Image (cartoon, rainbow, N blue to C red; front, side):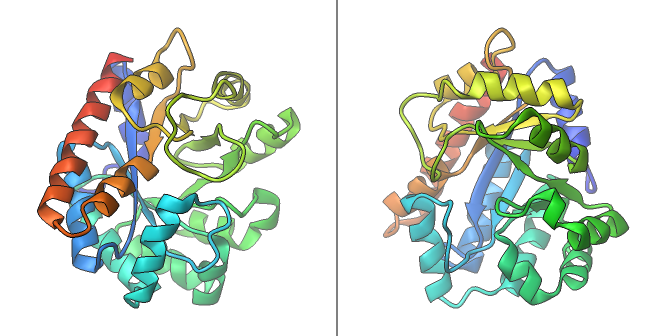
Length: 273
């Protein structure tokens, strides 16, 4: 991938290859800033097409216990928004589209126009905003448009068709379909809510639809990506990656090996699907 590759380009290439894109999430600053960068680069090297970097936040109401634990550890080490932007710069330098996933409060405190400018300057592709809806986001939409940043808003099984139409119309890059009601986390089975949500979202937009529902292995990724099934354009994985690091907190090299092996399994899965 060349530097400056856009999210849209990556999804289009994956579609041309007859597969879904693999989107990987890790929070910045865990186990520390340098270790977090190493982990994210491992995701890239092992087959992730798009990277989401979490901005650790003190009140993560939508995150499950796995992501909360890593984010809390990062906060206790003193990770700040500037560290997140430094992490973005290091990962985006690989040429992989790199987005920040964040609750809205830290961006507002930083200053929305300044955050957009600094994210763009770091090579970031855009922002995923789980607790911000387009009708409450005029300042972010204006700042993102000024800097050509992706605006990724969320749809859920509870979203009405009207709400999905409004949300997808405001998105750029892709649409994030969260197919699990409640907090995030790896699951042993995929949600039966995913298929209907993807179908309703695709009826409203031509943008790629990335699905997050707790995928933790290649078989689940294949099921989610299957064109004759759920048909996700992107398979989003977070908690399972974070778990690799938490499970090997006393051996970073082993954690990176586990992370690489899981990523490779998932990358095979999205291609099989």
